[in-house]
Image (cartoon, rainbow, N blue to C red; front, side, top):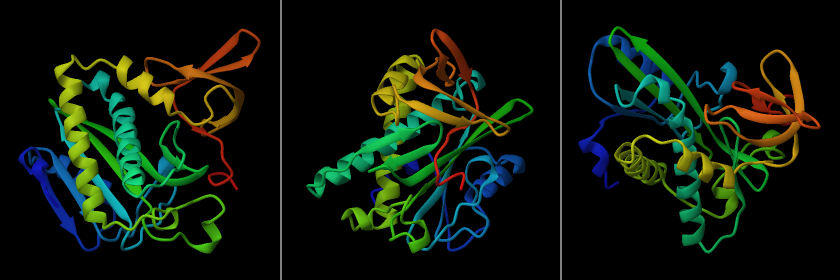
Length: 255
């Protein structure tokens, strides 16, 4: 790995850990200052959105980024869309290098989709402790062939014709993320450019979707993304509903 980003991050690597996000929480509570990248070969208690289990296998990429006092708390939700765009760009660059054509999409709020199957996910957590604020970004990318019971709704880089070491993939993602964050801060932390790019890549934009908000299913036309990161649904003609938390309903999440 090139690891140019080590100038801005402390790097921790584990052979096995409960969860890289949990380790990031422990660091935030310890009083240690700085930004961290936390990598593990295996997670025993990895979690996805809404506390769902995220199965981790040696060879797949599972890591977390811990940012301390990086941007104002009110803008923390921007990070979710920045990192999603970064992963899109990295995967697209890899596919081009292999002369492969695959359809990559970003599914609100946290999933990375390739050819209508999930290849990865993002889990964001925000913590405020005294005068300090922390943003924890957990990322999982499938590299190895997925298990047979998951193959109808999940996919991996290997199955898409890509052979890549997870350390190289990590370096590509962090290098790009560091560059995009620098640009974002230098341009005044504006969300419009990030949002517009994300919308061009959005899964099922302009289509009828179902959203599970944790307690109920809400259906409507995926109209756009609002400036607070919420999704705007047209639930009937000229009648709209904004949803800040939830997932676009898919069979691989709610079987």
